[in-house]
Each structure stands twice: as C-alpha cells, then as structure tokens.
Image (cartoon, rainbow, N blue to C red):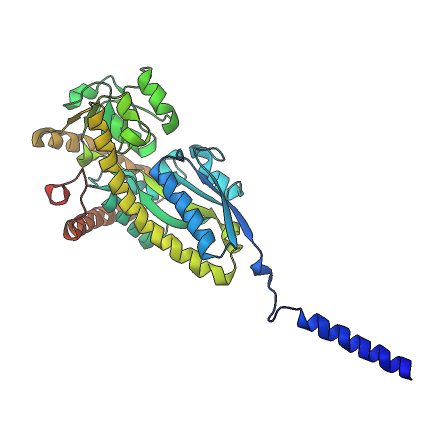
Length: 364
C-alpha cells in the first residue's frame, strides 16, 4: 500500500514539473519561421532593387523574425520574361517585373502602357493602382498582387540626335510589347531586347536607341553610351510594373501576420511612387554630367508625334475586341485611364511634387 502511494506521489510530482516548465498558452504551427524567396530583375545597386530589399528587411523586423526572405537581384533567380510563370510555378515566392516582358499574358493591364501622355512617374503609379483596383483583371487571378507601380514616362534615348519624326527613320530602338507599337508608329524599328543587354547593344551599334525613362540613363548607365535624349513624354508609354506573389505562398502566412504583411505592402506602394519620381531627377543629372544633349520638342512637332501615335491606341482596341472584349468595354478602360491621368496630374501640382517631365505646373 505504501509503495502504491509513493508511485502516485511520484507521478504527480513529474506532472507538476512538466506543467511548471511548459509555456503558458497553446503552441501553434504558425509560430514557426516562414522562409520566402524574392526575385528581382534589376541589378542590386538600382533604387528599385534597394527599395525591395528594404521591404524584405522591414517585413522580417515587423514580424519579429517569423518571415524571412532570401533576396535574388539582377535576374539571378528568374529572368524578366520568365518572372510571371516562375511566380506561378513557385520558383520564387515574390517577384518584381513589368507586364511588357510577358506580351499577351496581361492584355487588359497593357492598356496602361499605351501612349496616353503620362506626365510623371508619380502620376503613373497612382493611375495603374486605380486601374487594377477598379477592374481587377482576371489575368492576375493566378497571382497575388502585392502592389502595382509604374515607371516614369518614356523618352527617346539615342546615339543620334532626334529632333523631328524623320530623324527616327532607319533607327532600331529597344522597345518591347506595346511600347514597340509606339516606336513603330513613330517610324523606327522596335527591338525587344532585355534591358540588361541594352548598354552593350548601344555601345556596339546593334541598336541606336532605347525608349525608356530618364532614370535609366543612370540606373543602367545609358548616359555613357547614348548622347542624346528627346524629351517626348507627351507620347511616351510607361512600363506597368508589379510586385506579385505566388498564391500558395501567400496562404502560408498565418492570420496574425497577414495584417502586418498587407499593411506593409500598402506603404511600399506609395514609397515606390515617390521613388520613381526621384530617380528621374537622378537620371537627368547623370546625363548632364556625361554631356548628354537633352532635346525638347517644339509644340508643332509634339502635335505631329501625337497624331502619329493615335493608331497605337486604335490597334489595341482592335486587338482586344478580337480577343472577345466589347469595344465599349475596351474604350471604357482607356477613358478611365485618361480621366485618372488628368485627376492625378492636378493632385501632383496641388501636393507640390516636382518632376523633370510633364506640364509646367509640376516642373521644378
């Protein structure tokens, strides 16, 4: 009897020890560390890349280390044309690219890239986010969009001076997707060359220009090999960029962290809008230091360029109706974009945010 009592007491003592050293509250699977990968197409010194690295670092800090992310810059994990498919397949959990690298993959969103006269990067960023939130194109259903953003308006960066339409004839200009349609309409030949190959292409004469924003003069050092910039923002397309995520990866984020994650994405949407504006000034300053000539088109020449690019918009309407969309629907997207460009241009002037392109109301 005494032995049984000792056995019971011993068991109770062991139970008390276990309870004493067991953490209070339930232990959930979601407390474990989640490891993600982030693929970026730009080189790591570029501000677009540095800002995404800051996002990764801040995400880890705000989640107290429960979300850790390995960062792969410069197309080292996924190259630009393979970004969308790579994210869908889960090769990377998060990624950064623009829609023109996947022609036909995001046809509705490509409306944003038409030559509609975006005056600045800040305006373009606001407009593309409005467009996505308004229409929620089904083409994004396989991905989780974290935020949309957009480049500053394209200008003609060339190895020969372009002061009128006729000067573009015979030139090969790097311009993928819908941007290539604009280059064709203006009389040049588009080349869908990856951005990382453009510097060599310009220096070796394979191409004579690139239709990208001012910021690329510094980001990709085009100002070293192309000595002329025609500030043609009035007909400049812009590139619609995205930061997106594999949907299965997004679902791995536990409920108590999703709010933190989503809030951080919202903050970086606006940080990107301001960043794009800032780096256009950096690109222009770099160009001036390198002796690049910046050519402003007179009003009568701008009118000629605008008229020449009108068929680009009509071609898009025709392409989309051929895919089964109604003409009214497609023109509705374009009307919405024009209205938002006008709205946000006025807001930029009101907020006194300055840009190197656009009307006088937003210039320094």
